[in-house]
Length: 236
Image (cartoon, rainbow, N blue to C red; front, top):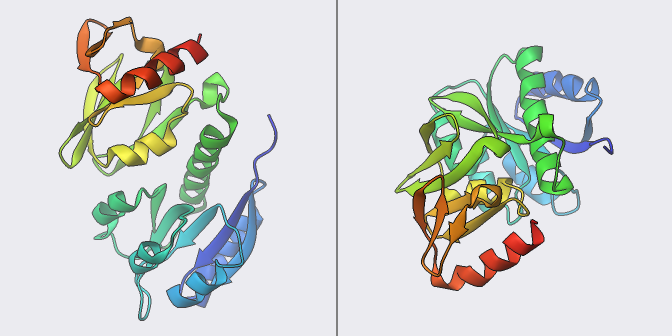
């Protein structure tokens, strides 16, 4: 597999904190520092001319917070929040953060977060990653849970929550369907209904109204039937 190099930016109003993250980035073989910013306004302007894959983003900054910055960015790269406060961890879910690092950052936690970002990048760009990398991390009870995609049957929307149904067990997380629709490889997963994303490999049969996975009937939207037929044909 071609080596992945993520272009990174660091955004923090603390020069000492920026320096510590910059050093960790420069020591990582798959990360490349392309920009440093000390506030959100500078970042917003800088990103107009600088392409980045990953931002290490502080939350509490003067004038505009890290959340305010993301609200203003039309094209959002991957985000790893870096903050001294744990109280923002829950809100970070709404911004599809790759990870949430608490200052001071240990090298092991940094490496773990970077690994998640690299794996996510590969999933989005390579299409069919190797079996040992074919997974995503899901935030569950403030911990990162590894979900192997070949074991994932389907995902179901439950209001503000998302239910994961795997071959091993089921669990619910606070997240949006859209966030996972963007993460999952499109050649293996399809949103067949506003409330369901299914693993194409797990579909046993279907008709004009439902698909069946392990004897479970899942509704199929009428306007999604043609997409399903095309996806199954391409997946053979």
